[in-house]
Image (cartoon, rainbow, N blue to C red):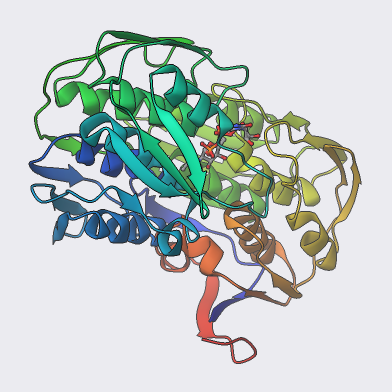
Length: 424
Ligand code: UD1
């Protein structure tokens, strides 16, 4: 295993380029299973989760090839397998996103049932209910969900709660179903819209993506396509916080500010100067300490849960007290205990963290617990006096492309080293 060693206290300055979106590319790669053919997907980030999705696609019979740094070609001509095995699903919950397309094209999917996850139970009952409404028979056997659809038909599905993955899975199942599917209370995240755009390029008939109601009219056939993935809004937000927490001045290129309005608004409120120009963001933090402000996570277009931990790192050194409320996942405060080891003053009350800003943090040995929690520890390390050691950084590699290289190019002191205390 590897760890990061960070020497804090260096201001970030310079330019950074944002990679393709993790949460957009995963369903887009799954969608290639809907029609046999050759696909070219551009702006694909080289992340562990993408490698896991590639492993799954290859297991299902696809061939994949990187044709340049960011372009992945997928040949689904021989994709005749419909089994998503435990060994892959256990590494990445988003593997369940192959269920919709497999049922759509092959009328059958056997998918290992994903277990719990550090940040919450994360059930997939809403995916299952939706597929049942569309005519699927679903059995649970030996830890696997066996989904069979003799006839896949359109249905009216009203989600009691917004679900990104549920919306994506049903969207993919519906494009080849018979008749019309209406998804009410659909997720509106940019990644759902990106998937819908890709499906439309394949010939799907979809309306209303990006709103609460998506209508899909099943078509008889689709075709393969070329598609370019949107930039990662969470990576963009993380670099904005990195700039703010180090009193830096940076230019963030290849991003889409439209996708992070709520985050930009909050960061401006905290005192970071942010100027948008031609698809880039200029950010500068001239105050010594950020201003305290409150945040509450909610589905898009509100403040994203995937930015909660990073924002909390910033608030740890704010001038004043802030409250941070997590409304999406029941256990997404694992970073709190580690931030406290670095000198942060945080109290948890139910779903809310009360963060009393301190003048300075001090480097410590800490442990990453999940993807975004690890990003918050890196951010705190950049601001701390002395050295911070972050172990179990495989979590961060799941969702950030070469984060230490990008930070180093901006002037941060961060090294990836082998962790002798943990098995390889
Ligand atoms: C996706 C993102 C993740 C992000 C999350 C919320 C990907 C690969 N991951 O995860 O980064 O943090 O959206 O923005 O895109 N729920 C149910 N039953 C279900 C499905 C969900 O109760 O069948 C609950 C979940 O437990 C959670 C909430 O709904 O409390 C939202 O989850 P969901 O939007 O489905 O998250 P994911 O798609 O798993």
